[in-house]
Image 1 (cartoon, rainbow, N blue to C red):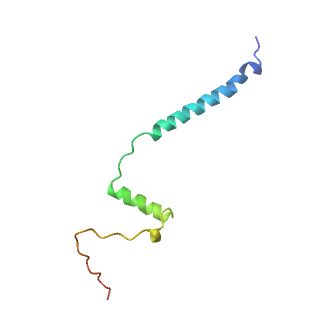
Image 2 (cartoon, rainbow, N blue to C red; image 1 turned 120 degrees about the vertical axis):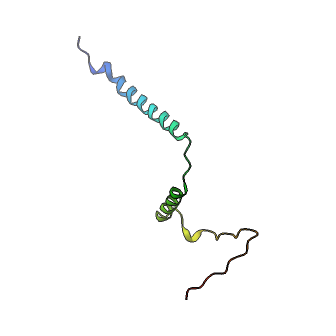
Length: 79
């Protein structure tokens, strides 16, 4: 018995839709996975990378506030 393409055309729609649904569900499950904490070396590397890519503008950052209860150290001048 000879099969024609009219028998298999629904598979052309169903198989890709099932594959896309599987990938979509899998990506949602992976995005909910807890992220590991970065150690100091990786954290500073990520910050430096973000600044170098221009994601963070170093001139727009607010100046750091001194810690309460400590005296400000005098700034040493270069000679």
